Image 1 (tube, rainbow, N blue to C red):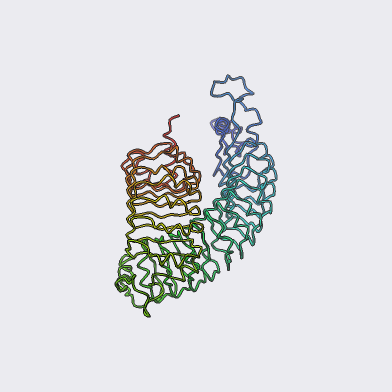
Image 2 (image 1 turned 45 degrees about the horizontal axis):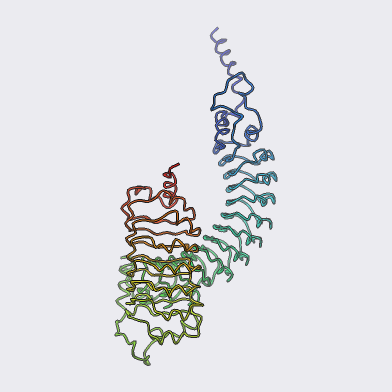
Length: 598
């Protein structure tokens, strides 16, 4: 008798066991999605998307068929359209055309599945802003995807793509495009039409050249072309004026690319076939902070390496360098120098293991200190680089340099020698200047970059405001406490460096300079910053306020959405806490936004 009871008990469960496939999408999850507009079905072992998901906003819920009363929180007829659908890390092999039943989607995440194709119905999701398709088995991208005018982010890495549709250029609002780890042999020329693009990843493909149309991507900050078959970089890439990071590792380059990109901070060219560094290429890197040249065939370092005054990290690991120029130690900001795997002579092995500081100290010891001979003409023993006037710098590089002389003024003979030349870069740093040399106005139609750092300037002359082509000015380590209001006329100025001065407040004129992208104001005495005025600077991406006297960080600063790097360390404020600040800019901005009263 007991056996029959047990058998009967088993049979009573049969009705509950027939819908095994629906068990991975609990009804409560669908019910919650109607309220929130978001449905997360990631990692549920789905082999297909249940019809209930597609019809979430079209079918009447089951409870509406039953005789139940609805509370205020359960009014299904007030449901929210689904805007976010996460289906990542499942086993989907295809997506149904029924995806068109969710026209309100702004985010569709399908990464880490087994998709081999996409339905044309995707083109009907005209509200879509993020489409994540990485780690699938796609061999092509349907043309219909290129009609998604609101798409901002398209990630296609780790697929089997061999080509892309020419219509890709229609995605005019795209800011992020990741095509890495595919089988691409070339790129559509229409790629240059993606003028809003800020991040482009092309690494791990089979590209042998880059299209000239890339030059039109003037908002791209990061370009990764690593692990391809590039033998040359088109000169037109120098027109990508916003580029800050360029990755060219593991290609077949024989020369450092000549890229006068004014804000390029990081250049990675490791694992290529570069044998020598040429002066023209080095002179272009006016803002470089990190230069990676490891695993090449470089034999010598030219003296012109000292032009890289902003360089903080130089990686020369595994090259063929036998000697180092002593002038390498004169790079003012160099903090890390990596030389392992080079056949260096004249430098003890134990010295290399002691780190960068000891090595640079050793190189400085090689430089013979000689008395200044500014008043004397060049003798037969004077090297061109030691003369007051370096004709090569002026005529070939359009560079006017008079640095590290501890001079009270700049000799007129220097300006006279450059009188008829379109000088673009001026470096008068590390002297004893108390005023800005008035003869800088000789080059007001051509000069783009001025370095007056490490002097004794107490005020910034209004005359500098006549240099209307100016894009970068370095005034660090002076004695400035204010900037003239006339500076607002510098409507092309992109970056200004004011670290280690005497500013007690954020310079008012900077709030009016809408072209600014970088403002470095660390190590001053700034006590307050106005976020409402900062929001006018729509292009501001880097703001350094570290080591100042900020007692309070206004929550509205979180609304400065253009910021990519915000430095607040070393200020006496209590909130945000140090743990949040340590997480980086995005975390700080998110925290500040959460503190804005509603």
